[in-house]
Image (tube, rainbow, N blue to C red; front, side, top):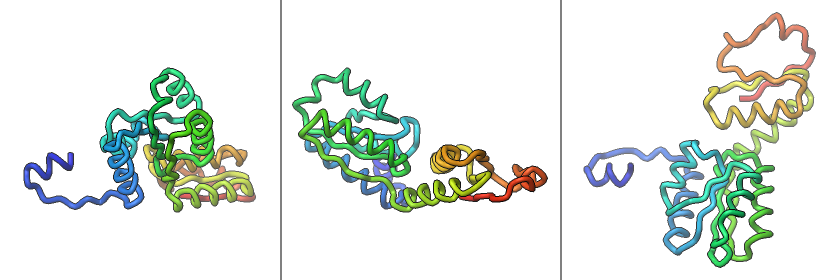
Length: 185
């Protein structure tokens, strides 16, 4: 898309997050050097699609099971240099599991921890708040990867979690039965 805009002489403002731009640079450089690029993230997420668009034939896996299955089917990777990056909002546990698989299989790899520190801190805080709550309210757009990740984390440690987009999604009478209500967004 950027190449097309430039070719047409269209002025634009690139509002890409600096963390994501960094990943674009890493994969473009490593791909040009002949590395196989492995992206750990959601295959249809716009960020992952953007990263994949900066390199040749990226391998994309959403979790350790997908990664293991993909790598098992690709014998030709043993002699190749490998570069691994993550979607900035991927769960750190998923990232660690995937990085361990790659480290065990390939000695000729470079692994870049590209998880956004602000997102990671928000996820840690959500887990801590949810662990102390009777119900957890996760506020955000239902189509947001960040919101879905926070909801999943909250639900893993809190007896009840709700994903809401606005105050209209809250049953205030039902909330009255809870002593400790956690909120994250």
